[in-house]
Length: 163
Image (cartoon, rainbow, N blue to C red):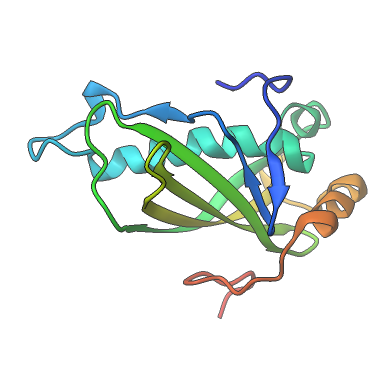
């Protein structure tokens, strides 16, 4: 994981996990011929944000130590404003909903110093037994942590269960 789990802690306000530190900046290799961040690299940045969120909600190293992990099953991403090379990326995350095997989260990417939103990303994650490679139940302690921070806010595009 690229983030130290003992690193800066986020604030939890209005249902969002918010960090005052940049997630990263738009790297030269992330910029395309239009001189803005290539669409695929938004997902790379959101994956970094997921790694930063996991320790806050009981996932990451402790979950893997128990033989479990998280797989993304479905994702939705929008692009609201261009991010250009060198711009500092801020990112916040929110737990929307969960059940015994699934977690629905929203991430928001913004210009760290100017504050405008560049993109939003919703992801449906599954709890997976890494040895059997099968979906399984979250540990009780993880479910309890989800319950503490889930907002119940409606997702923009995804659903906790298949429609």
